[in-house]
Image 1 (tube, one colour):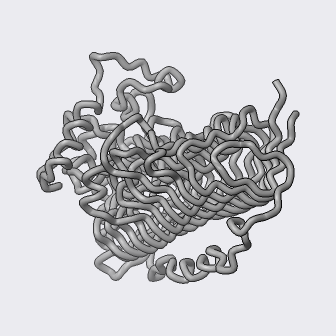
Image 2 (spheres, rainbow, N blue to C red):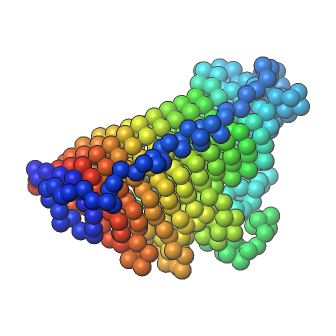
Length: 471
C-alpha cells in the first residue's frame, strides 16, 4: 500500500508527495463559516400545537388496512384546523388511505404501532394538484401527504407511513431502468412509461406555458412524491418511518423553516431519494437514517427553464448526526439545481455501504446550470463507498447548453474513509472551472486510484493522507 501525505497541495494534478511549506492560500481563516450555524438554527423553530387530539376513528376511519379512510382522515384534519389546531391522531393498527392533505396548525401524529397504508390505485390521487416532477412545476397526481400554502404543520410519532410502491405498483412507470431486475420489475415496451410525459412537461415549461395548463395525471405515468409540503412555513417531520415510496420521499418545496428530525427512510425504488429540500430556506435535517434507491439527501432548486423562472435557491441548510446506508450519494447537491444552492453545513454523519456510491456529491451540467457555493462538511465518517468519497460531475447526463454551472467555496475537514475507488473525483468544465476546494485534516484508506481533477482552480489539501491500495 502506498501512503500519500499531503501537508499542502494546490494545482491540477497529483504531483506532490511529502511536505511543502504551508502557503498563504491555506492560511487559517479567521472568520470560520461554521460560526454562522447558530444564527441559522435560531431561525429554525419547530411549530408548537394546541393540546387537543382528534382521533381518526371518531371520524369514521376503519382499522384493518382494507377500507379506504381518506374521507375520515380529511374530516379529522378539517375539524382540527377549524378548532385552531392540535393533533390528528392515528391510533395503533393499519389504516388504508388515499392522499392526506394537511392544513395549518395540524400535526398528523402516527402513533407507535400505527401504519398508514397508502392506496395503490392512482385514481385515488385525483383531482390533480399543483406540484413538481423532477424540478418542473405541473398539475399532477397528489403526493401521498401534501400541503399547499399552509403554516405550522407536522408529521410526528413513531409509526409507519407505507407508500406500498412495489414491482407491480408505481415503480414500473419509471420504464427502462438499470435496477429493474433487482426489484423484480420486468418492464417491456408494451408497458406504461413516464418517458413521453417527461419530455412533454419539460417542453411546456420551456415554452412558458402557465402551470395551471400543464395538465398531467391519468395516462401520463408521472409518479407522485411521498411527502410534499409546497410553499409552506414552519414544517416539522419527526420520528416516523417512511417506506416504499413511488418516487422522492420527503420533498419540501419552496418552504421556509423546516425541521426533519429522527426520521427513518427505507425505500429502494427508482428515484427514491430520501430527502429533497427544493428551493427551501432554513432547513434542519438531524438524526435521520436513510437507506434508499437513489440519493440519501439531495438538495435541489428547480430544473432548467422552470428553475430559472422561479429563481429561488435552497439556502441555509444544516445536516447533522445522520446515517446513510444504500444510495447514489450521501449529501448531494443536484441535479435539478438551476435556482442555485448556498450555505450548506453537514457534520457528524456516518456513511457506510458497498451500495452507497459517493459521500459528498455535486451534479449538474451546462443545460441545467446553477451556482453551488459555500458548502461545508466536517466530521464525516465513511466505512466504504463504491466510487468516490468526494464526487463532482458537471457533465451529468451528458446534457449540453449555455447555462454555466459554478461550484465554489467547498471545505471538507475531518473526513475519514476506509474504502473507495477515489478520494476525490472532480469533472469540471475547463471554461468555467470549479473553484476553491479545500480538504483538511482527512484520511482516505484503501483507495484504488489517484485523485481525478479536471477543470479545477484553487484545489488545496492540508494534512491529508491518501492510502492507495496495492493491486
